[in-house]
Length: 194
Image (cartoon, rainbow, N blue to C red):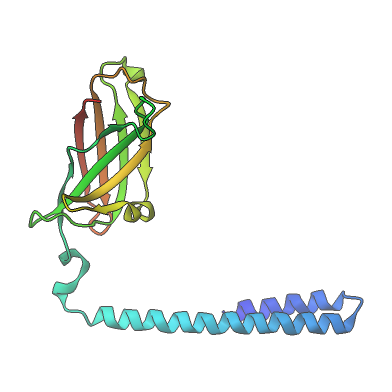
């Protein structure tokens, strides 16, 4: 960190030496010095916070480690997964995929990870059977958690208006869920009838 500050100051001095107005060069150097001091203070503060977190985590008992919080066993694609006509124009343009991560106790948990979703029409030729594929990042996934009076699950919406004709009889939804804490990968598929 000190090397970065020294390099920054040196560059500022060199830049100031080429200035035709010495007072302006000094003012610029003072401003840059103040900015670097502010960055240094922020870095010190962040370092202290991280040290504090490491200290707390190192003192936790072994039963409180991440692998003991939940142990994901499977995912379920729920019965609400299907194509929907969201704008009521008679054409189904949204694929809504509802998934439930389930732990070893049989409880639905808000698991952290990424999701890959594929939509297939197995009645088409081999090269045309895959209608679409999407990836949901962990940051996106945590925003898609949905709890209602009836159910709790992730609700994943995808635009499929340009991928389907409306004449499909059966489609297959394939889901791959990668659980980030454990590294486990869960695969599930479901036939839907639009």
